[in-house]
Length: 203
Image (cartoon, rainbow, N blue to C red; front, side, top):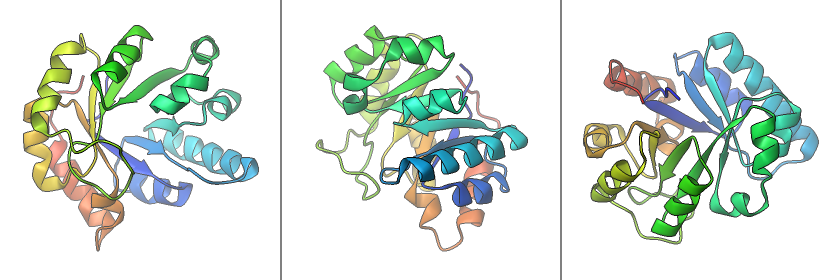
C-alpha cells in the first residue's frame, strides 16, 4: 500500500479540516474519550472531508465504527489487537496497521498480516504514554529489515528537524502529533513538513 511520507495524527474533525486545507494527504483520527454519538459524528465528518480532499483517512482503535461507517483503514494498538475481529475487518475491505514496541509485537503484527507497522516511540514524547524508553534510530533499521516490503511508520517525538535522519534510518512515513498541533502556527508547521517530505519515494 502506497503511503504519503507525512502522516498527521489529529484529535478531532476540526483539526482534520484545518490540516487538509494545508495539503496534508494522510490523516489518522485519534479520539480516546468520547460518546459513541460523538465518535460517529467525528469519524463521519473526517471521512467525508478526507474523501473530498483526496486524502487517505485512518481511524485509530474504533474498528467497529470504521466498518459501520464505511471507512477504509484502521490503526490498532497491541491492546486493540486482543479484541479486534480481524476477520470482520478484512471482510469489510479495511486495511489495518499495528503499533509495535517490542520484538514480540512485531512478530504478532507480521503473523496477522498487518498492512503497515508503526514503531514507537522513536524519541521521548508527551503526546502519548509509553511503557518503553525511546527506541532510537537504530531500531528503525532493524524493523526495516524485517518488514518484507510493508510500510514502516515512525511515531513518537519526531520533530521536523529529525525528519531526514528518521527517513534515512528506514522509515517510510513519519506520524506527527505535537510538532504540528502544538506549534505556535500549526498551518505553517504543517506546510514546512510538507515541503520537507515532498518528492520522497513512498512505500
